[in-house]
Length: 91
Image (cartoon, rainbow, N blue to C red):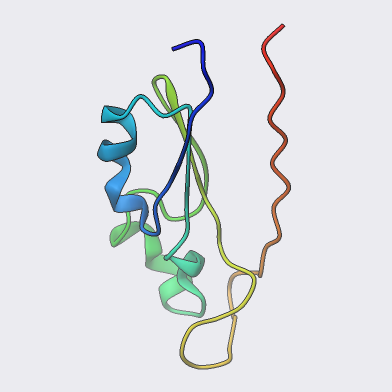
């Protein structure tokens, strides 16, 4: 528990695996935050963790919205994202 651990998994639906592994932080993507309307408006119906940061007990989950797109070259109702994550040792 005193060692920081990073769990990388493509889809946020695998969050329980990160929790079971006692991960400090899980980084996921896959959802593209819906990518375009109407999906960007209803993405939460299909993914429990559609985008952003979630605190899940001792594990934090960050779901990245993506820097580009999948399939049609469109983003409407959401934005591309570049994230900077700083990990600092505990004081």
